[in-house]
Amino acid sequence: MRVLAISGSLRQDSHNTRLLRAAADALPSGSQLELWHGLGELPFYNEEIDVQGEDEHPAVRELREAVRSADALLIATPEYNSSIPGVLKNGLDWASRPYAESVLRNKPAAVVGASTGSFGAVWAQAEVRKVLAASGSEVLDEEFPLGSADDAFAADGLLVDPDLTERLGEVIARLVALAENSALVVAA
Ligand SMILES: Cc1cc2nc3c(=O)[nH]c(=O)nc-3n(C[C@H](O)[C@H](O)[C@H](O)COP(=O)(O)O)c2cc1C
Image (cartoon, rainbow, N blue to C red):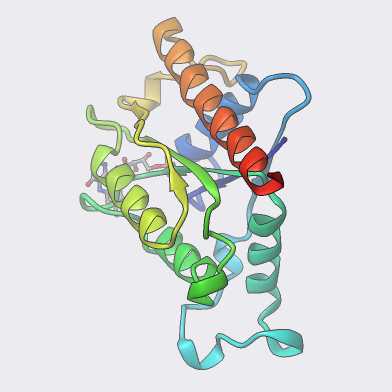
């Protein structure tokens, strides 16, 4: 089982990227979490440059290939002004085309989020789930809001709060189960 993890923050010291690393610890053995770092290399979405084949932008090809080859997608989103960071929305827009056969279609996905305030990016998570659902992904309803992110991580990168660690584990387990189930449906 290969889970592709994308952080909606380009920041070196991002809490959301850190949250994805903590999520890797919750994966069952035999599963791997691969962090994709290419969001900042993508051009702004423009239908005129959205072409297939040799002329496809290399960063776009890399994104689509990474999503296509993953069994599941895990996104950690910050909240910017009560919504999704533009860089993440741009990546999702690229991944969502061509619409009928996009790499997001039927892709099992889960969304988590961290913010420095108390609410843990719940609005941004809801919007990312909406975008994924509109793109045909199989999105978990669960949210994982990590508030007060400045104080949430221990020196080893794991979450300080055992309840939150357990909750993150539950979300990851649900995502893995969804992906396993979806693989069975595809194979049948
Ligand atoms: C442009 C901007 C807008 C923000 N808007 C919100 C917001 O609406 N709600 C919120 O909880 N935090 C907001 N924040 C604070 C972020 O939660 C905080 O910067 C967080 O650490 C970003 O995630 P990162 O650590 O993964 O980069 C905003 C930050 C920036 C830079």
